[in-house]
Length: 527
Image 1 (cartoon, rainbow, N blue to C red):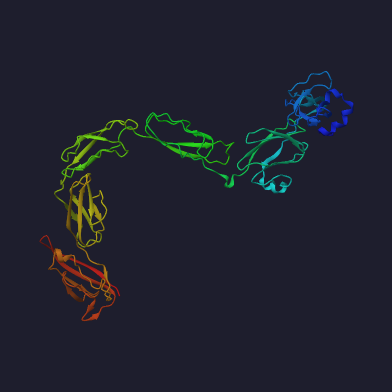
Image 2 (cartoon, helix red, strand yellow):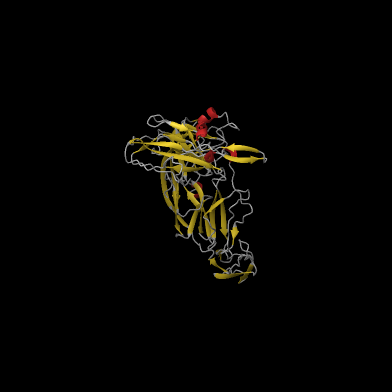
């Protein structure tokens, strides 16, 4: 069966056979010249093939500004309807019916054109692969003013299907505007002269097979560097409780849109972030932005505090941190007893702030009177110091200049004198002892004349047991040196000759708590 796309100019050949009253009109030009106007018919596809039991209306493409007139016959006396007929498709066959359509422009009706309807079994045909393909725009850029580019055009592409003829009806809108309708015999369509960020939505149907499902695709022009952010420089962001607030729907830089949440809640204090979404149709390249709206407290934001007993009492400020002025009762803080203090705002201030009551806690001072501890045995490889008094959750502990800790245990303490400090958590009491002695010795020394670690001794015994004697032996048990804790130590020589790098042994006898103790171990000489 031959398909025929009937265009307007074909029917100019039929003018001579038609009643001039139906297609011609006379108008006067300068009252002396007359000109004949003729309305061309709409564009149709005939014959069309319907699937059996399909209920899709017939389609014709009118000219711009035209209205369609549908007829069941070509009888001159038939009254047309504006509603497209739905063919009876219950019976399969060829040319089961013929319908007619014309169009009227400025009151002048065109001739009627026929649409022949065939009915067949649904063969499952579909429009294939409708997609956006900006890469093809350069191939079709000529013929447009300005030339089509990926920055001002979109390109719809699809694949032809051998089950249906390659003729298509389409309708597209730009940003939801007025639809543009037409037909094409190609498997693509370019929409030019668009702005950055705009979108075109195409609805594509088969002209020859109206029952084939339509396809819809939305393609967009990239925003590129054309993005902009709405600003609200003149919109206040701080309000009082229960204020009535209406956020502007047009930004300072002229961008319209909507807020989410849509209304400002001032029923409670706090800060809520509101998001402004630009109108996607009018401002497709505008970005979302946020505005943080604060509902200020209606009370002065003074806070409770504590002091140490006997400390200099702080002065109560007559201006709250959030800027509310007023006066206190009592006017001064008692540094010996807990108390409640009432702040009364001055009259006439914004948001009518309310009275504020704060509590001042006075913590006792100098409550720590003792500090006791234990250490591991002298010369233990890993020395541990444990505080035994005072104990409790209200205390923190510190060794030397280290960090404060809640644990009473200090591990891997180096030999020598150390200090322990205990404080209460309120900072009102502290006690330090500087006589924490750890007995240990260096595991090696380097007598190389650089004045650093050039001799070996157990100096920590000079405070605990200054009369102790230290005996140094080589690995064979030969006595090399006899030294005292308070002396200069061993310089790594024997009878004036340097001893080789090796391990050397020592024994020491010392007194601790009226008891004589003896310890033996070894150290290294490194060269």
